Image (cartoon, rainbow, N blue to C red):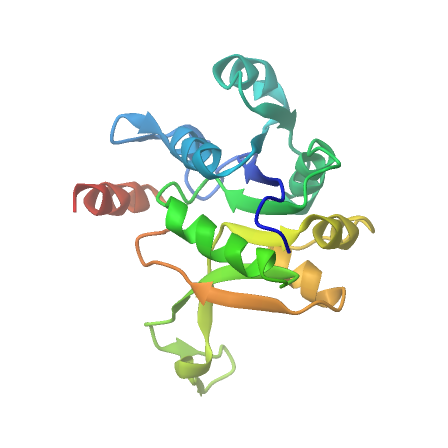
Length: 212
């Protein structure tokens, strides 16, 4: 694939934050909102950014992000991604999908996954080793050396990702849908600091990472 092909990012920020207790994408993190950090990084490395937010927030977030396309999310993550993909221009060759709840993803992670797609892969995801011991609920320990934790941003050839979402299937992971459609997805090195904000304590951990 040619290095000059257009790349867009869909930042998914449409969750209600049930486990967090409020809309975590709007929580303050070292002086900036979680979503602001995610969108700013995506904008540094993308030709354009689509931000997917709760329907009632589209107006306010559109005013804040004048340079980005802001669209309403759906009832599930997959529906929100689908809405975001619909706003990506048809001439985009590569699409990254990033969860706003990972505000510490840096440009290098984007570059690694995009490089694999530019080199010919259908998709690429950042992963990190699983460090905890994993036990099955019905008994027995899983060999963690065979496991990796998946992060975002994930990058894909635009036509592959659009087709994977076209049938209305539901999934919490974009790469899973692409693999289910018969395409191989490449794993690249992620980073331990690229944590997901799920609970309030995760904000404190993110602030520690920012200070190091």
